[in-house]
Image 1 (spheres, one colour):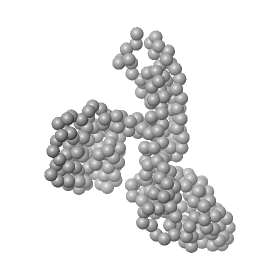
Image 2 (spheres, helix red, strand yellow; image 1 turned 90 degrees about the vertical axis):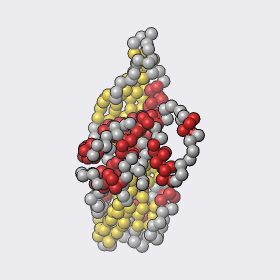
Image 3 (cartoon, helix red, strand yellow; image 1 turned 90 degrees about the horizontal axis):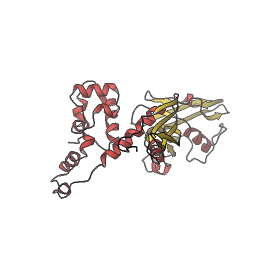
Image 4 (cartoon, one colour; image 1 turned 135 degrees about the vertical axis):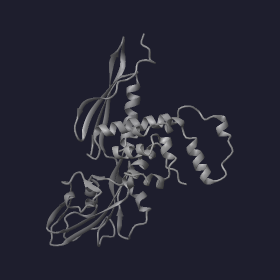
Length: 322
């Protein structure tokens, strides 16, 4: 009889893989675990991978989305729908401003966007609008990084200039993800599961990165809830000050998470090397540092700081504030 405590699933195996699509299989899952794991990974892949999207648009002379523009074939609603299909990659967490300044007649595509250095267009062929007359068409676009789907109502709450139109934003870099489960033989049993998961991305991440990140996210979330709080910790007297409270919460964070090595956070090699040179090799050692302490480390810089904050955010942690 098969020992369920010994039988473990295989690591993901590549069935097919390209720059934007890939199929992977995991063998040897307990009966029923194929659906449990497949559904969980699918939800994480769709909701928890950061990406970039256009959130605001400002067109001179246009006060609302139900307007028309002289000399432009499309109405504003159609232009906004076309802009939502433009896929971007941002190398910074700060919002970026993109502009368009075109003299017609001309068919405007995403390739005509004037981009700052931190932004890259993934589908430059995407049509935006067609200027039919001899007019200048100008537009100012705001792009941001985020997670999942954010409705335009959330962006409208922000302070923006009059005439700025908010858009529904789909930040997810995932175009499609599906999974299938089939039975397979393990030992004398024929009811174990094989999970096949198929991922298609917009090109800002590879399908393998999407799967690895989703697995790591699930592991970190589950690791954080292993065990129960000790009664003496729950009855402990409240700290005297707000700063002590924040430090106390971090000190009593799940010990297993704090033991995670920096190399497991999948940050850029230069960031890992800079932290290693500063003798910071675990998450626990990292969260005890302040931002100014890390910026003083040679070879880190603001970009490395953003990578660190993003990795800690995935674990539900932050740097020391004081």
